[in-house]
Image (cartoon, rainbow, N blue to C red; front, side, top):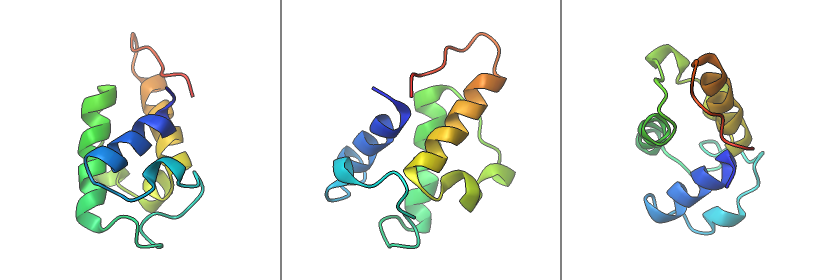
Length: 90
């Protein structure tokens, strides 16, 4: 399962986002009303726990979290920066 699929699963199960498994990876999630600001923080917390990464407040930016693709790329960058952590295929 790739990073986008893992995030989709979280959105569907934990946040109960309708049709999360079919979301376009390039869809702007907050701007389209899919996620609100509190849900974005829940996603950040999930990403930290699921992938064993630390996300600083200064990294909680639209460029990193705007779309599923942006989130996946952000996670991949964070994983690549941590020595000894295996990258999730994506």
